[in-house]
Image 1 (spheres, rainbow, N blue to C red):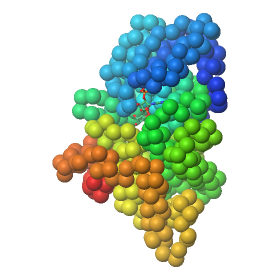
Image 2 (image 1 turned 45 degrees about the horizontal axis):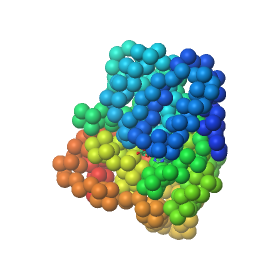
Image 3 (image 1 turned 120 degrees about the horizontal axis):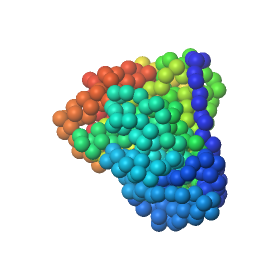
Image 4 (image 1 turned 90 degrees about the vertical axis):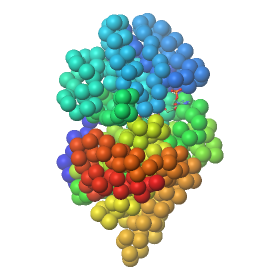
Length: 393
Ligand code: NZQ
Ligand code: ZN
């Protein structure tokens, strides 16, 4: 097992009616004034926002509001939020929504307490020294941002999507009521389940880990649990237990737990996908689904023992004498699962018809974003990235 540093400081308040505790949780943070940050309308329609406002008022917490976060959250709204927070002397940001709202909140949090342009952190020019504290009321199980150290923002000019990771932005608390996710359209539920699995697989497929029996067991159980419950939600979206399993899996998939001892994550599929959603504004989880099979077929020989283990322990493929064949069956089985929940397994199925020039631009941008190489299952260079995009057509 490789050395690791696991830091998961977020208080999780989970279950039916959990959002009623929001005011009290914010109050415990000892802040004078809060920014209530949210998305494009779902939290308004479900009246969740009204309940949160009420909960804040009950605790006599002053707040300002900024809505309008879109999926693949934009830098321009982050700038607006930073100005608002400075003007209103905001001390805490409450994100009500999914990964996009949470990431926008984290970015605003960096921008308020660090001088200069907040984009510098995402552009890898310098490191933040602090972040305004962030709390979360989660409405979609997907990105795992409610416990993660990461935030991903898109700069409109050039469609440049970049992540910045630092423990400074890990949320203080995450309120998670699985019932709040029942209003999601199926496509978002399925994209979320896909993203959750990808966070786990990006840590599972590594060549650096050595022995990691417990971490592998957790990762494999997480993957099997999400697959089983994604299928249940496909036919029964109001199934509370399935919503709950998926929501908890979302947090554990990206708080670092399933990477403990792996000696370094892969995260190539994420790097490839961030270019897609930056340029073409697709749903992140669906973008990952469209690329994963091509990535897996491109790299599996370089990480064969892990792909065989995955095929047998997660996808129920009988272990055969031919390891490569077993690995390929595991990849096929994962793609079939994605199809079964109506996720795309190619760029065409994702709705994109891309020219060779488009693909070259994606690979070039991915090369720049990753600093030249990415991956621990197989180290990818720009030429490899291009080949994977081509295979995904
Ligand atoms: O804006 P509203 O109206 O709320 O609609 C949202 C949005 O259209 C809707 N939605 C959310 N909760 C809902 C709901 N609709 C009905 N009922 C509900 N309860 O769902 C849509 C997607 O929301 P979004 O927040 O974009 O989803 P997700 O959580 O998948 O976040 C995606 C973003 O997170 C980034 C992605 O790249 C993408 O930008 N990621 C962030 C990570 C992190 N910070 O750790 C890691 C991930 O790998 C990922 O890259
Ligand atoms: Zn993701």
